[in-house]
Image (cartoon, rainbow, N blue to C red; front, side, top):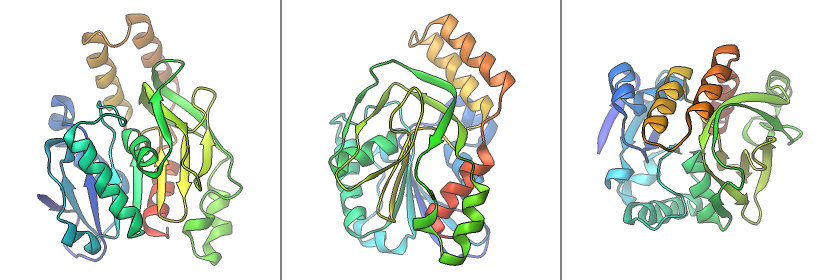
Length: 261
């Protein structure tokens, strides 16, 4: 287990379940994806631990109760795959669900949470979604389940009804689990966000990504033959003329994980 504290003083404790290996670019510029997530979501006084689940690194079951929340990252792997580590991750997520631990799923994490809870996941019928995407929030008060009563009105007013997010996926959630609620959709993807009670939330896009991370990923996908040159150029062009609503997405994720500003 790799353990890194965001700050000196410890209070709440969170774990990143990293389902992707660090790219050379992210290692060089950010020191790894863990630092990208910590920069986006950590607050002073918190401890954040890293488990590289893609490499078979998992928290001990006896340690789970010590955590206030978990994040499952994106991944180049299929959330519906049967690799040993994915099956083990599914078992862990089932356990966290029963324990009612806060779990935030991002991209692959969003999809694997749906799989675990009984939803349906598969390849997108319309192909890759890479770049900036406008997401429409359909729930009346996105944050109402995660805040104290006196915070709800102020925070809800601060979240627009549509937000732009960075996307990079060719799989998607086809159907949410029974009992789950769709929070947001886009013209490309019908289930951009979902929630299950007060302790599970999935986001198809990447609230943690910066534009340079996505540009590097586009270059790698192009060089690997996963996408065509014209598609890559159009995605990069869109990044030059628009910005993701990163601050709003960070606020949403922090409020979900911590139930406060």
